[in-house]
Length: 68
Image (cartoon, rainbow, N blue to C red; front, side):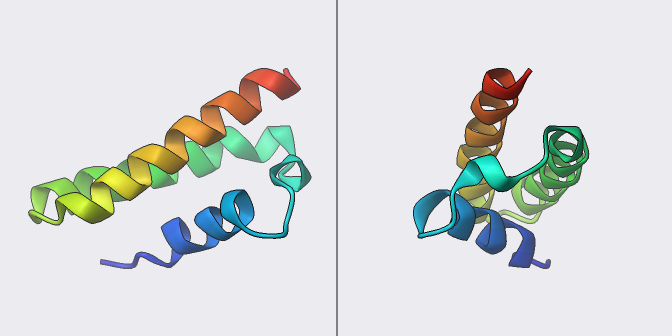
């Protein structure tokens, strides 16, 4: 399982880079990819990684709502 996507998105939300730099039109694709990874992590029994992915998904949803 590749957790780099989760880590990179977490960096955006929890470090110096402002999340509003993510273009609104890319958020649905990011969410779809992240949801797939979350589901794979859950099936593999890696619940902490899946929980991290879920938190980032929630942040992306809020960001998308604010942009649209």
